[in-house]
Image (cartoon, rainbow, N blue to C red; front, side, top):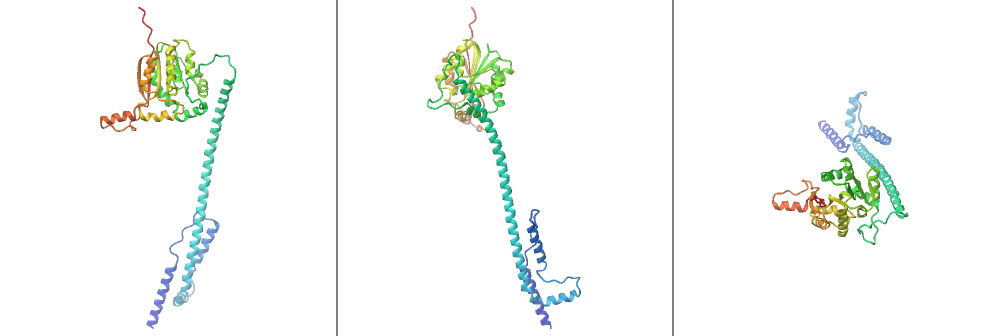
Length: 391
């Protein structure tokens, strides 16, 4: 009898071990809020089936103790079925989870693609609208410029500008250069902050100031705010029109021609900021001679350009497609003195930030910094000899 009880106990232990090995491993993953109705229905069916994977006797049923004893005694009859039920439920649940993951991934991909498409449409639409508006403005301005040049005029023939471009190619359209300046020259506030350096030199100018190549009019606004009489001349019709819209006195045309049309000694100062590098040497010398002629005794010339002695400044020179050649400080000074100017001086401008420069631990480091990261610009200041004192 004892032997029979031992065999029954071993049989029950084997059934429990087999069922434990084949039962689903762990609690199924919870359903997400985004689960579809089909997923929810499948999970409910699996939960119901899992509760019947192995026979059980509720404790509240009649004669439950006796029934559970019989069930334990006959467990060898259904242990294979219980294992099969558990394996099937586990496989079905894995398939359901795989389908759910694939659906979630597909929904996520569709949402990401949809967001990217909306963002691209928004950005592209805004850029296209801005580009269309800008292109329209430039087209109108350039068309008006072409019509004005084609129309007959009673004015005298302008003095031709110094040759700056290859004869076989037309110059850059004014609209293209205006866009270039907007992108690379810097904001008007930044340019004005640098140009205020020249204001003290012009406080006692013996006449009005002419800003040759005044661009967007930053320096003219500085002079107007300081109460100094000034006008400008600008070749780019778009920039010249924008200056006039602000109430600045700006003529459209070539600076050399404008100087040639003025009486001798009629100006107190001639300013050319970032201009001479757009001319060949013969054009620079012709400009300097005309500036010397129109300046009153004691008048001042200011010519700012890129510092060729600093290698880091060469990038800015070659970035501008309208630059002809760099002008070293000694060369510009020599040409000015040859044109009749005196008291010439060089002012170094636009220093490089200290965090960009090399650490200086020796005299050689300082020399290298000066060569690589010297001031980015310089200005030549030169005067017309003053009127001799009466004897």
